[in-house]
Length: 297
Image (cartoon, rainbow, N blue to C red; front, side):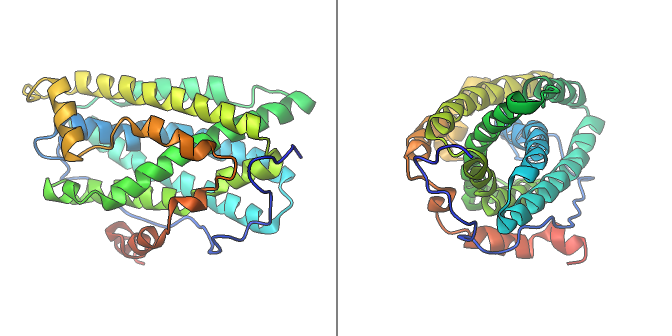
């Protein structure tokens, strides 16, 4: 195990409830292209969250599965296995949304396939063995822990963004992103604690966190630009820059500055994801999500 300067390696018990995959069902049949009415650019920014980012989550789940043999804390092993199950359910649920948007004219399959190819090439195991394999595993865990910090923060924003309902966001899509966001809040500590268990070095944690920021922000920009450009609608409203400024000012989308303002908090030596605040609202939403009720729970 690596040096644990910065945060304390300890038995995994702080947020002691079982993380498990939930059976959910979403009906996207009536979802329009711009499911946040009058918010074309904002709709496509949300599309990035639930169509593109899951490709990274798939790689994250594969990385955690690879790390399982190195985790001897039974509680943490249980949570890692629950995390992997949740990410698999995310992928399946978002696939339904992607298929629907494709069916009504938004070409997302080719772009998502390209992202999946890049993720595999950049963040796969590369067939390494021995010490090189273990070091690359630690590097990926550090990178994914940094990324999960941002997805937890965005997940919390989705749970609290009442303006999405005020703007008339389609209920199925609102439920999809809030359900996903709530699970991001629920399992916010798992990848971080897996990293701390397997390595724990502060230098690697800081370096990979900066790299996570440098990766996610351009990904959001490029992906949003692609989806907006390929939107087949003849009228996309005002210029995209004006839409972006307006949506940011009104809180319809998270502020892009989050990628910078969150770094000082994550880089504190004593940081732990449980410091983000209580997860009560996330757990309440997961208990009453329309998608979970539709699945018979």
